[in-house]
Length: 353
Image (tube, rainbow, N blue to C red; front, top):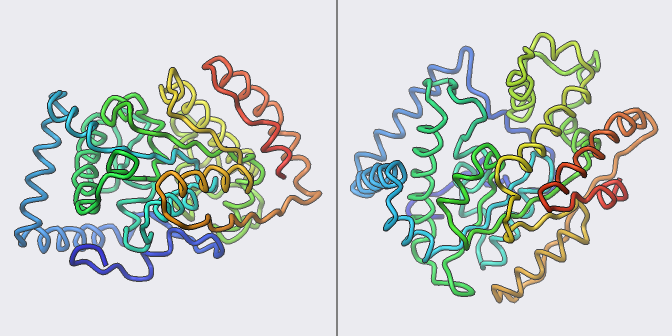
């Protein structure tokens, strides 16, 4: 329970390491109208309560403050809070990191719904203008408005928290922060920390295939995505002018590798790494993850030990061609990150396969 709301089991499993339960995260086709009606009904119910009205008004005030660059608002936000953003590509261990950060703060992750703590929201996008299934918005408005809403939610969910290690601490999985990293850094300030897990693209792709229910029969990437992650792969190609029909002629790994490559290129070039001493890069290994997280348990005096990280090693001889295909991409990424003064953990993620 959080406040007066109880979240059902479907929403609580975002931190599960063991199962490969797929959340489609897609809205479209025949169910779009029903989704919009359901969302509107929920909004109407919330707004009918005193708390709902107050939080809605506060969100608009925060939106106005962000839009105007109100220094007094930003100073108060940044001086009282430490935000820890897990900037994680999908299937890179970001959910595990976020869950353990909550545990280090003495929290139960099931008290925080996925729409608040997980990676889909704020829905920051690479395209300047895009349609989200409900409306067309410019990137600036979508980013600022949804971040304002998230800031209000963060203040609500952590409203009873006392400072830990000097500041109220709020973790968040922020997969899409790479698309507007400079905005994140300016808004959340010098106390904000960024945890960046890096996994080998072959291992991440295998994990995605498992989660999506297996490789499509023809071995190619599906034209109709089966999950939100597969939609993001298609979006990455669309941003480069390649449509879904063309992507559907590509081997699955070829299509995925392009998304992985663009994600980590943007992470480097869009402002997150540059002159940022608050970035922690973690290669996808149990030792790296657990060592970092145990330090957070000690830092915030949780009195707990980190829960073990579960890694499923599934590299098979049939994946050798994927390894060869990805090697030039990895070597280029190492050089790109080095140009921004950050070491890309090529050796560690290759050794972890």
